View 1: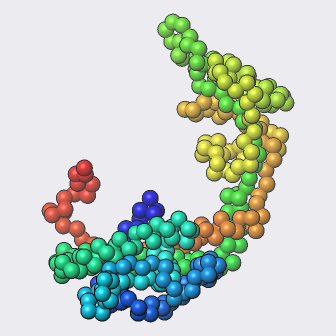
View 2: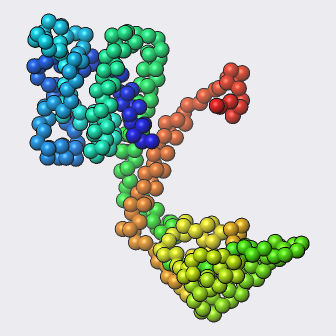
View 3: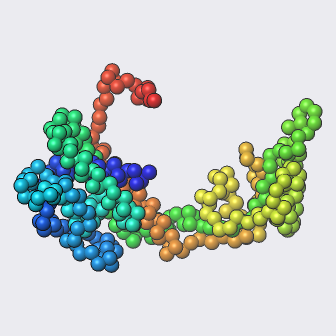
Length: 340
């Protein structure tokens, strides 16, 4: 999905680039390649430098593709009038502008798509497509989209500068979010898979499993092994399968449990919960241990949370002064539109 998205942006970018800079889109044969005025970031420079390809060396050459400003008489006999050369520096600038991943697969995909778009855009120019009203409307709308995307990128960069004091304050006020625990859990189905006979059989089955859950809870509180009790719960419900169930949940956060089950975090180590029943079954928990992650461990998570909040706040502050009135006679009531 992401790759389809950036390829679409690439098409849009190629059209805008061809409109704004037609001479730079084609380099006559034997002409020196155009160098990049804005060098790629250090990560890209280091990854490509290892290949031994110079920044002004051609990485893509589309023979026969030239701008309308290139005179055909420049070509040697039997050769194409001109060619378009994309240097390593130009290609890496495009990669940076598109904000796509710089792994080899992305580079190869772009190397295949970019020449195709250049050729198609060149043909569109020859046909005067860019002079058509529809093209201009789409180009103007695309400009709005790109400006919005660039602004959002800037906002995200600004929001990423979360003060350390904000991180520490959030940690102090929300330490329970970073509490982890290791639990053991017995799951008792709501009803037996062995159907009871006669009228009210399903209700009797549900009542029987509820009673079984209470009995198992009493035995769990007395210290019996949870693995053994889980197997008995499955046997009572007629559940076949795992003969050695593992009731341990491993380390998890409060958010890793259903909201109605999160209260088990109030248990003390070794304590067994009451039976918790919901539409999915009956549950019995024992808390083995719990601890609060340190600030150092929680810092990346807190920083991410605060970045998201800062982005939202910045965008809302931009949008807040503006209101839009919608002519419902034209658009119809909100939510009434038909979709295929």
